[in-house]
Image (cartoon, rainbow, N blue to C red; front, side, top):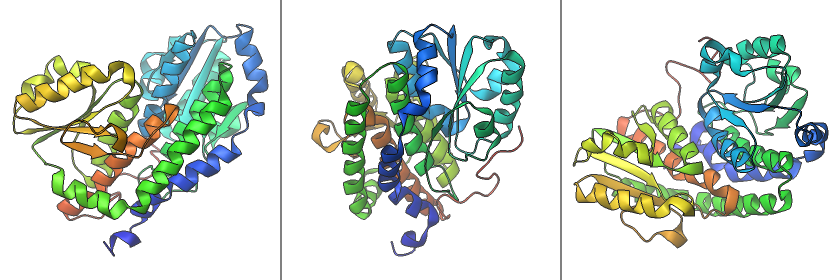
Length: 349
């Protein structure tokens, strides 16, 4: 464990609670006032949410919330947006781009497309000197310290401030959202204070097989998709993130002792469906692990995450997966979070 304490990726993981709290303290909805007024006047016929990788996945809960508020919102990755869905953008489109760097290849290409269409940009971004930040009239800064490894602070901060921004845009209860996120961040801090024991529990209870799936519904898909991404990035272990219902449409055939699934308990509305899937997987001989908070660990085997409240759920759900990447990197004999073939910013398609 002593060598892990010196690992930059591990240190960035352990700093996430403080980083999120700092971002929450700095959130300022007044900068969105004119945009809010435009939305209320019906100034846009659609809202397009786009990004790449973890930034895109972090915007999934926001898409759900915008749709729930009755707004015509679309969620599409930026590569598809610029090459195969260009006609989705017009002068009456609000394009909400999420990118921690604000300068990856697809984002830069999208800026030119949006400029030609005369659309409006809202940017959730960390680098305020980036092309994205410079082009966007409306900004939601992430306020995360610069990272040197796989996205951790930037991902969690993005989830936090973007959900607050969504509440501002839809006239939601920002004060309640702040309370929920702060309670969740405090719980994350408690989890990290005992991180070595959590890592040991993962080592003792996680079963590695030839196939690994992360399954969820609703806002939990942010963690399912991002979790699969960082398992490959940080520990070089292939994993698939998938909507839990979609898993029954084909991949359920993989259910056997060769399959491990991490199944997020997720939002209350669909928890019973996830419980049924968990039991069916175990009945078929697979290793299904229930990802949940300590006060809801009613199924076994389970993997504990920090306690989450309200819109804090997606922040808490990624934490045990980050811990799992550390464990699997150790199993693979590599430095957790170290890039070998890519880098922090993807500058070419």
